[in-house]
Length: 273
Image 1 (cartoon, rainbow, N blue to C red):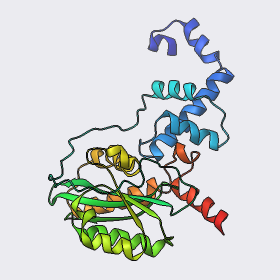
Image 2 (cartoon, rainbow, N blue to C red):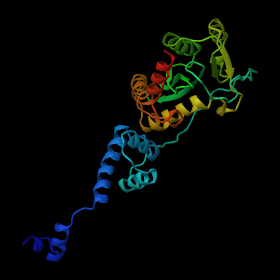
Image 3 (cartoon, rainbow, N blue to C red):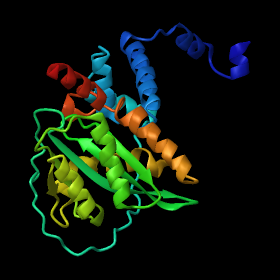
Image 4 (tube, rainbow, N blue to C red):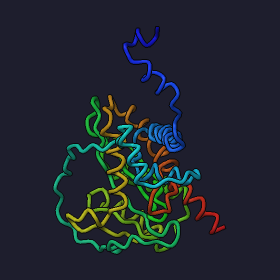
């Protein structure tokens, strides 16, 4: 009766009815479910490489190529969006020392910090500005300030937050670009007061500040360019969620042994205690 309704031969019906899945098919189905869970738990921000590392951390032995193959079958692709980047107003060239000189190696926490400002678009308030500081050793975003204006006060607020959270050793390096907010006398006085050495990128050389530039690129691709913020307040909430809820505590990094920045900072802090 069922075969007549479906208009298929009885032999075909019984073939599929009696066919059992192989061990490989069962494992692949289980892997697909796990991969999908990781992918959507991380808001579609993880590609095959990071999903592969999560699986390995959970004790699931599988090759990167196999993860890529299964993701292709599932049609899962991480978010990658490129959009227009506004240019900062042209400032007079200021000659400053590049102490960091693209040496991003570190041995401990609070040895080298990098800072920058990036633009965040909103519908109601137009361009808003995120000032951030990253510790190069842990990749942790140790401080950030979101503001409607790109000012020296915004930068100083970010610096003060970092100072409240971390002990600053004498001679620590803080690297920034040559933006007017970072070359202001108020900033120089603040750094001098804490005996922080200020290092500057060369004009037109973004790789001089690759660490924080990489963070801002990830922020844009994985969060900012995937949505439209109605106003400053909505953007502020989303940035907090991304930085504190995802980037620092859930986003693994190959350069720190596929740990999250917070995990790596906790391990390094234990070593120092």
